[in-house]
Image (cartoon, rainbow, N blue to C red; front, side, top):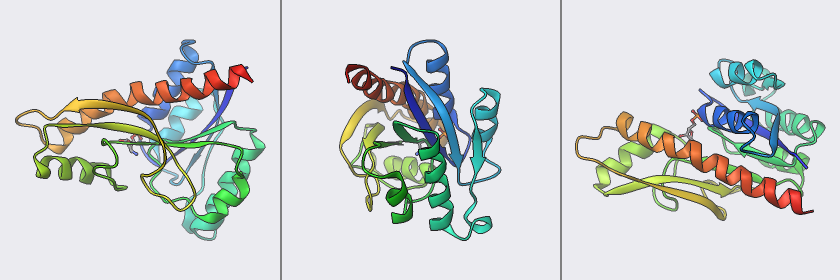
Amino acid sequence: MTLRVGVCVSGRGTNLQAIIDACRDGRLDARVVYVGSSRKSAPALERAKAAGVPAEAFPPAANGGRDAAQQLMARRLVAADVELVVLAGYDRILGDAFWDVLGDEVPVINIHPSLLPAFGGLNRLAVHEAVLAAGVSETGCTVHRAHRGMLDAGETIVQRRVPVLPGDDPERLEARVLGEEHVAIVEAVALFARSAARV
Ligand code: GRF
């Protein structure tokens, strides 16, 4: 059965696009049925609309604060009957109000632009700057389960490795990692789609 996926975003939405494209090409037995954003100006919302996916923004300032905004977003995800929630560049910690509404049945996964547990943090360019400052020869991306009260923690689902090259700056490194993120996020959703197919 086609997996019903909800995606939470805040920005440009290239990972969302990777999932939408893979669904459309038949590489994923899944369908993005709802997109929720923390920002009205997120280009990800346009990507969703272009693909015919219902998408809404819940800016905290206009929705009674972070918790009320996330509660509303969770209600929409539940109403859309999602079986998996993907945090794809969602820039806020999810508070209890979100988890209380979503419940324990629906898995939530997050994509992060480093080889966790190394180099956590919400700001992606700061992550790549920290990688370069540390002088490591390898970085990558991680898709992991997200749980109440945790940031950049939770069981690893997929990791992909990326070399750090001489002359890299945060933007160049980001571009290389992002290419692998698009593969990793599709691989991760595919794992859930396959397990949904078994039940
Ligand atoms: C990605 O680097 C992701 O790992 C991080 O935020 C960025 C989102 O990029 N959590 P995009 O909006 O999917 O293009």
